Length: 106
Length: 114
Image (cartoon, rainbow over all chains, first blue to last red; front, side):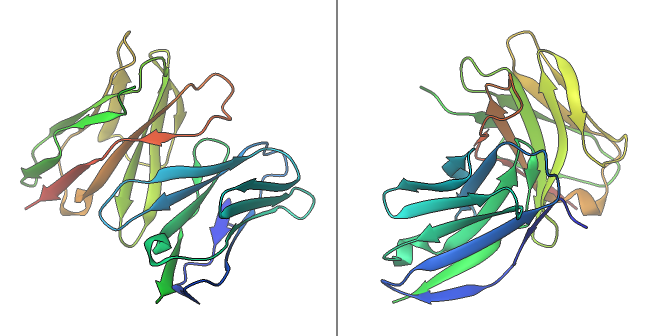
């Protein structure tokens, strides 16, 4: 079992809709979780950190963490074409999933 | 605040050669990590340095090595280059104290092996 698993996609979402990205992890002792966005040809950039169970909101982005079920998700509300990118989930500092490619359809 | 700086941005080498990549972290960051990214394999962790010591290591052969200097700058060396080493090499820095800090990535070095 991989340490961090993500659906590779591609995930296609109409403009203005909610995009939902999911990530599961295997280490129950993990304390920190991160979402990165990577545009094609660019390096990953941090968009959200979450450390406690529940929801954390930042603008159009909401990260959700459920440690009992070992999953973390990212919701993007009012999706824009500029949100089209690959989204990487990371557990602790160094363990990354393979990423989900998201395409927002105008 | 300046971001993570990687040099060079592009490199072309031939099989059997060796290469050294450089990374300057964000000021105050003591942890530097290196990753290899290829289209098929995603982001693969190479190693992490904290206070000049290798703290974590991924599953790469011994041809891949690194070091960190007292000013937190880091270098990665790959010897006896193979075609499969063609990839984007990313460096990331963090404060690094607890192991629970987010990573900040440089723009990467794109290495092509002919």
